[in-house]
Image (cartoon, rainbow, N blue to C red):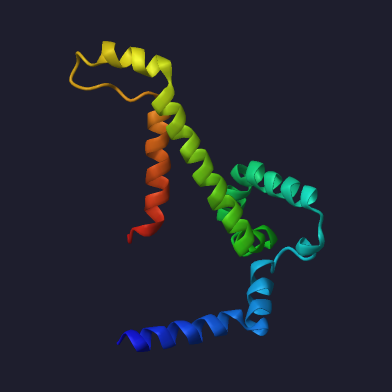
Length: 140
């Protein structure tokens, strides 16, 4: 059994490492962004930052016109990766703020006398963030 697993891993790694497969994966990855690989690093960082900042505006446009030009751009694997990475970084930042906020620590002592502390704005935002990440994985 172990021999079969090793053979499978060897065949699969050769398949992925084949130049034609690498070219196909690269083409799919940068599909909607022609010339991305030829740009200088500063331009790439600037474009990534622009996509991250523009996402609150682009998301409703995508919901209204998913098959339009912006919809095709947002379905690109690179843009998905950029947006998911930024989303995760913002979520970690919110958790950091919620756990180190001094006003939260002081008000926790005051609020602990009641049944339980009422969530503050950051905690409510984190809750909505988690619900938003969980909803696509549920079946209606």
